[in-house]
Image 1 (cartoon, rainbow, N blue to C red):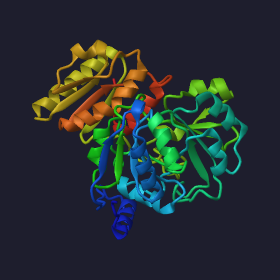
Image 2 (cartoon, rainbow, N blue to C red; image 1 turned 180 degrees about the vertical axis):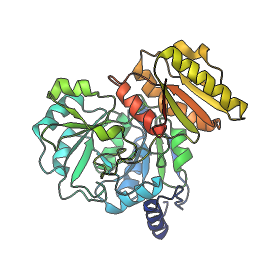
Image 3 (tube, one colour; image 1 turned 135 degrees about the vertical axis):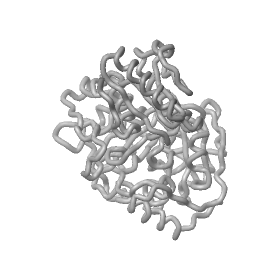
Length: 376
């Protein structure tokens, strides 16, 4: 069994609050286990569940990205998650459940809208924010009186959550600020030596984190866009608002949902978005690539299949057909990680339409770019 040095964990949390860039958590070996969804090893799942119930951490696959799980009802587990990620402790964690009715155990009073949404979108990539029950520690909720709840659509995740006791708090399984992992190898890259176990279920299907909707307001509010789009939510609920702060990089208010306050998804190099007329955009990106190459920088560009032939760079990454935004979303974080693997210094990407799942793609790209965007 891996043992944490609690004094070191506390020092890590304090360092996070002081906005230090690098956090080190000293523990022993991390067990990395391949666990295919179609034939998950029950003994491995039982071991993973016991780790959670014993206060440890386990990374696991979902349909969106990999999650970093701890016991949602254990305040010390939340502290370990924050320390392992190097994540500020005022950033709420999502509580993952394996049965719809379990939300009634951790929510003070479940609104009717939640049952309607659960019937339509659960299991699936939708997180709902509601008033928390007293049993949920504020360490899990980032000090808030609300709790974020989701029922993932992944067989390994559901079986693991069940073995873990039914309530697993989990942000994405990456160090804070890095691109979220869609492959087990990237979880290992960030979390080896920081957690007890990684359940590697292969590449995930969606590639961006769940949509988050706040049900504590008179009119439901989308706090983070995702695969379940604003338009889809409107079809079910009627009027749904979009939180204007979800596109702000320097929002100073307390985050009501993961990812609202801090920079996320960033590669190590500089990412810049170029927006405008497509022909002018391609000319501008070509000019920027040439300038950076002449200065000795390694360059990268993210393009659609139709425009791959337009660019010369050290690394050209194709997201897929420009009309298939689901493919763009699925490939985005993997591409950003691959740029890191290749030590790319400067990356450019053309802006995508903001309707449907394109809203989620642009939200993640803006945060990854630190809102560096050039209009042409």
